[in-house]
Image 1 (cartoon, rainbow over the protein chains, first blue to last red):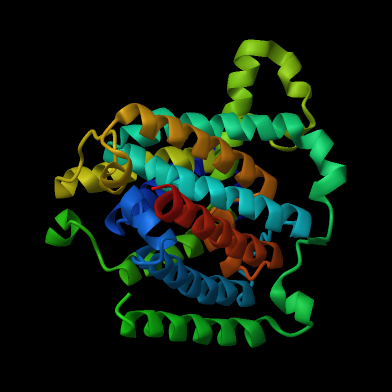
Image 2 (image 1 turned 45 degrees about the vertical axis):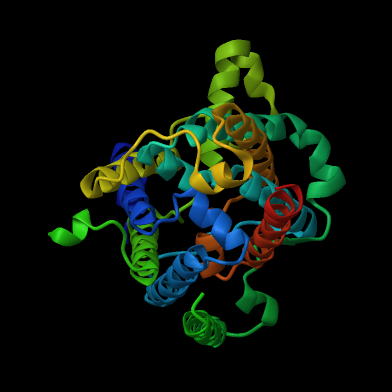
Length: 185
Length: 172
């Protein structure tokens, strides 16, 4: 279904805005658009960010894989590899703790009135993305494609049916959340 | 409708809500939720403003054209949604310095903004290097069980925890 819906450009821009509105509303209600909460997570005394992320992953994973089994959606796994995902992830992590917001939550922080996010953070992220665009041709062959694993998913990597991974991962995440809750974190 | 004006909701309810939202974006828009590409597109738009069409010769902008797309609108929507939620609960306020920062490094806005700028540059650079952020890799990619996203998400937190301890436990 949906190819006609998916190709309606103007409607899609509106749907993007609507999805963003809901996402921003949820992030603000989840307290995760706050510097203090994000740093609390990275300093390992406030587990709000992990609770929100893991419950989003478990809910999203079961639903998206069910919709895929029903033939209603297709997956869009991002390409990556050790060079791209691991090194890029570590640089991102340094920025994450230094800024105290991420690219999604900073938009929410701006909506909440945080001026450090608006003046410093938004400017910085845009400059950083631009610097990467300029460095991209030189980085691409030398580092980014090292240890590439393409767009593989875990079930493809392990050569098993999707649900053989979805169900154990869901169980592990729920057990982890239960443990976090029991430890009072 | 008092739940709309609450200060905050249970993190599990918020997470489940984001999960359901991702079913809808896959179904209605054939798109996972993600945010950092929008910043790269914006940066391309700004570069084009200053350098003209020559800026568009960058190979990166051939792969990610600097246009307003679904994801760009998503990021704009986040600002509006968070603003609405904060207004409803009376938590909206214009503030320069978060309290945790102020308690360690003082209430000066200039230092906080300068560090936020440096952090933002690292974040934007790293997000595009990894090809995604806490939303695109951390939630949407991991829920699709993408190998790249699980590696990236673990590294986001490894780098983040190391830097946070350095900033607040070593320097601060």
